[in-house]
Image (tube, rainbow, N blue to C red; front, side):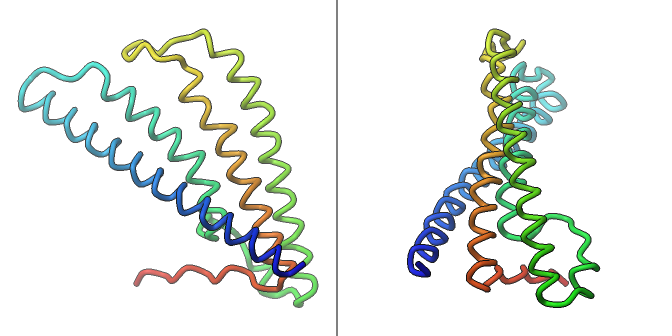
Length: 170
């Protein structure tokens, strides 16, 4: 059983590696578009008509999918003073309750995100004329990433190997 759990966690880590590369690519696209927009507006005097919109859409994806990615890495803001002063067993129970609560929230994100997609799929963005379904797809996709990473965190708790905290930058 432990072998299968470790295998599942490795698969989820590979999934997160792909997510991380996708997020890096989105950040690069957003940075280049914003820099080009500033250059085009103030140096050339002729701003691009689509760059702001695409940068906003990239930021939506970075926010929702990046939240799921950061959740697995343990880099989201948290108040963990209770976990520090709780005993080992109580802290473990609290972490499991937090993970399950987060997964439940993610299920709600997916459910209502899909309903939102149905409502906006016929609308188009003003500049790029793409369906508004694409930017809003970030909500259910982000929820799915959170659910997948919640499974990984539960596996970590079951195996007694919580992910190592990230090193703080001095």
